[in-house]
Length: 150
Image (cartoon, rainbow, N blue to C red):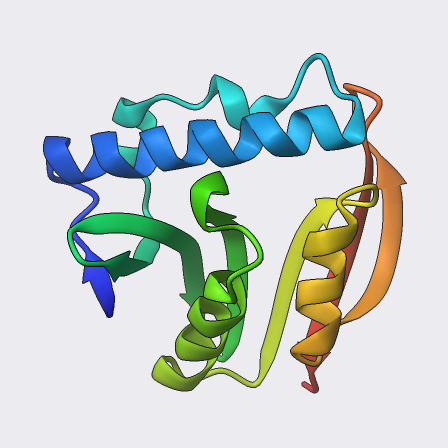
């Protein structure tokens, strides 16, 4: 069900990109953003990303992806997206829990749009708490969430 994805493969990067595009288009509408940076990301940028990707599949369908990086004992969750066809079915929660169980970490952080209440709720129910707020150059209000202790 969960697998490390070889994002350097053109085919896999294209699958991740397509899922990100579908998911982030919904988030952009949800928060009222007309210029949403995640939607500008290309499949080539995914292929060259230094991060790692854990994916969830149902059959052959890639239904959720989390991009992350680990530096020392710190886990940085860079992107977590669920295909809109699979929203509200627990895929985000299960994928996040799988990541937290698979990698060694003491502290973890993630960022999301403050107006993306489903994402904020997902992180909070898995033990994260809001640690900061700011506004991006595009005018998007963001929250940073963290979990663990140094």
